Amino acid sequence: MPSKVRIALDAMGGDVGAAVVIPGAVISLHRHREIEFLLVGDRAKIEPELEKHPALKAASKIIHTDVAVAMHDKPSQALRRGRKTSSMWLAIDAVKKGEADVVISAGNTGALMAMSRFHLRTLPGIDRPAIAGVWPTKRGESVVLDLGAAIGGDAHHLVSLAVMGAAMASVLFDKPRPTVGLLNIGTEEIKGHEEIREAGDRLRAVNLPELDYLGFVEGDGIGKGLADVIVTEGFSGNIALKAAEGTARQMAELLRNEMQRSWLSKLGYLLARSAFKALRDKMDPNKSNGGVFLGLNGIVVKSHGGISSEGFAYAIDVGYEMAHYDLLNKINQMLNREGGALSSVQTAQEAVS
Image 1 (cartoon, rainbow, N blue to C red):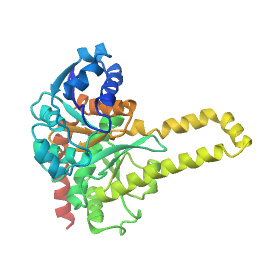
Image 2 (image 1 turned 30 degrees about the vertical axis):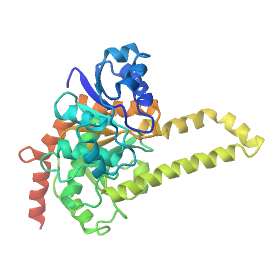
Image 3 (image 1 turned 135 degrees about the vertical axis):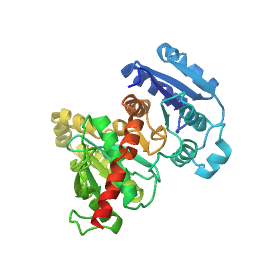
């Protein structure tokens, strides 16, 4: 574990930029005193914010650029216009050069993925990177991936997601052998697309020391927390994520409206105020902020673009945990060591074919 964790922040990413990034860094630095920051962006916008926070200023270095990737830019446009000059690229470049351990941006997701994949490349054995997020559940939290980085995927891709997700869960949840489930339309072995059934066969055929494969999990199993890691390809994962976020907002609005309908409802709210506060804290989107791009030769964390400073601080916290506990090396060893996860699964598949 490194004594210092160096974090490069895209200070011009997101809907607000430095006005959220800097206060978020202040919050996270208070929780993790060993962080050092590289603040990448327009010095004229960063320095006035830094002057308000002496402790952060002492722990930070500015890399100046006045070029930012727009939220509406297509990935190809961002690569052409912002390559080697934008705050997003330079933050990624700091990881590439070994000047930072992790990069965090609230900017354009497609552009961040395209730039990260182009500049950092993927780890050996990984065809396509994935976005992994922390999902609040009845049991606590689960890691869910892929949340939209890659559409579709064969059995090899799903198995690699399982291994990478297990590595992330072991870091976040301090579990040496996290449980893993494949998202499917049913729990029976005959259900689902061929690639999902094949991935299940491969994971079932071997007893990987890195994870405990439980089988198929239906959509409602995510919120129930049936597994520490839920694996799916990016199309289904992104739909599941957006559906859950929309349902949470809908339920909150319906509950708010009901609480205002009559004086009895308002009285009921007052009597159950502590319970409602606990529910609000449990469903706080700030605490689930920070999607990790897994499979790259570097740690990249994506924050929501319109998040608050408190929410951005949680994204920094995720990046800190990933770097502090050496997630990248752990994934690399699990995937590619002699007789490692993917080679073991491939051998098992040949045996059952």
